[in-house]
Image (cartoon, rainbow, N blue to C red):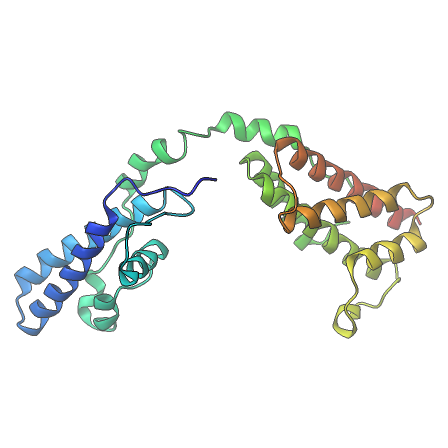
Length: 262
């Protein structure tokens, strides 16, 4: 994804936030409630407007800004962290007036632009239908693993293909840890005693429960493909993500069926 420059003049906003911070402190020291109220309203609106501008891209490029403090302030705004004036007044009755959360109306206005401009429920339903699920005897999978499978499926539906590949690798490891314990290959606390690599877990499980080399080979392919994706060693597109996740779901079915019948 490209590095983008914010469309809103966030640098001017940062300067104004700094200025408003000083004015707010002055209004508190001189105790000017009317001015304080107006300043905090403007502070909140400016901070929210800046944060919205920054959230449009995963990385915001500001190559012409030499002032590191400005970039740091914008980084804090982007993360929703307190700015100096908010920290200074934290714990006082005044800090309850600082609120840069989006209103329901603002979310409604931003929704069509930020979400439906690139996605809709059609793609979501189509993605879930396309990717499939795991079919097993009731209660075979631990709840933790079920959660990861569900998250991977939703990432596919939302077109987050790198996440799909990373989660597929994680799903495989969680499943192997579970299976080597369920089948008695390793004790329940094995991971606390000694680090056992995923390739070893696969081989130990297959040595005990799997006849033939087909499933063993599939599990190792998923491991290697997942590793390559996690380390950014190859590009990931829809086809690659779908193939890896579906292969992982098939491997889960076969591995748990083997464990149950072995």
